Image 1 (cartoon, one colour):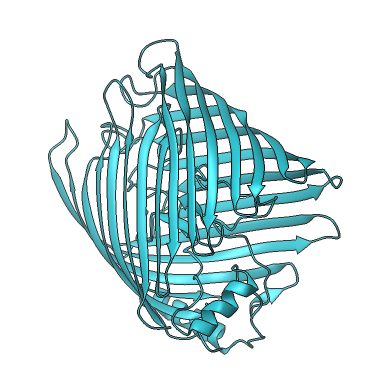
Image 2 (cartoon, rainbow, N blue to C red; image 1 turned 90 degrees about the vertical axis):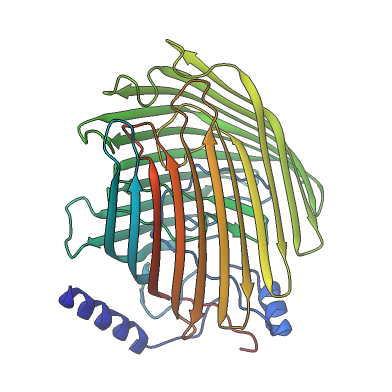
Length: 473
């Protein structure tokens, strides 16, 4: 442990001593950055922790008229250009962090005695990006590994990883193509003390993130090819064939239990701009899901056809308010037996984001098929809310709460609630210190998802290549 902490200290020292060229533009627009600086009350939005889980399947309730762009891993923001001190041509190190966790958990799964556990863990994370814009296309590769040291030991399955690959190709003034792949591996060791949803307050778009605790491991890979056609100056049509693979090991009774899932299908989207601030549209997601489980009662037991159809509306009230609403139907048609609920249910997406002078607020609700950190063929209800208060240009606090529950008609029904309070202080434009206290309560299936309550606190030091712009600078 002493050697590891010494190495971390050397890493941060080298980063701080590296030459610092001028900052390039943030992920917000130049107009927004200038307005924030003129107010003199708050910094621009900070980069999110790149070490957290897989989020590409999360819904985007607030429809926008954006074209294709590369999204940063686990973030609602666009992957920005790089001009930081750790850049060599296409290759750059975007962030690095070290966090220390103290955790107390009580597990209460049926069939096993109630167990209490105290864990002290360290987390080393970084974000590595290979990005290049050609004359008419772009290639981006993002890699975010996270290593855990638990009770002084490094385990073979303690490395969490998230990889993103994107290629955008404009074929003509009307046709464009983007090929994307997202891969994530959650090891048996994982902690989450960030906000449950990341929000881009310029567009009103939110990305929900996964906060479930282990100890079962989960691997997820999603590949899609998105074709977009500009039907008219105000109307865009896109369709995206996709293929997803998911694999999970048992978390409770036996780590030999396994569950596999294959999702084959695609998404169709129609978007029409009514005015510069209002958009209406239609989205349809259809997937054939096949499941293979070694457990006789946990996880999906038969194949299913999953569908979500939504009519969407988005409106931006002035510059600081965004409102998005999607209403439709969701269907899980069981193929084989009754372990997966069949029938049409209400599907709903709703999001409100508001930027105040010294704070940000966002709430997102989704009812439909989504990935919450475990394999399922059922739809779920999920709500997230977060508020950040900028007390000074350097110091801020963030309160985040979330809850989800699957809509399965038959048990087991999985659910989880999450709350965290996070404090952040910018030591320099690139280096920040944070501390947080978090609470997770989850109800699992007795095999693949652990049931119990975990309380944990963390303190960490993080560096980003492009720190937030301070007012007046």
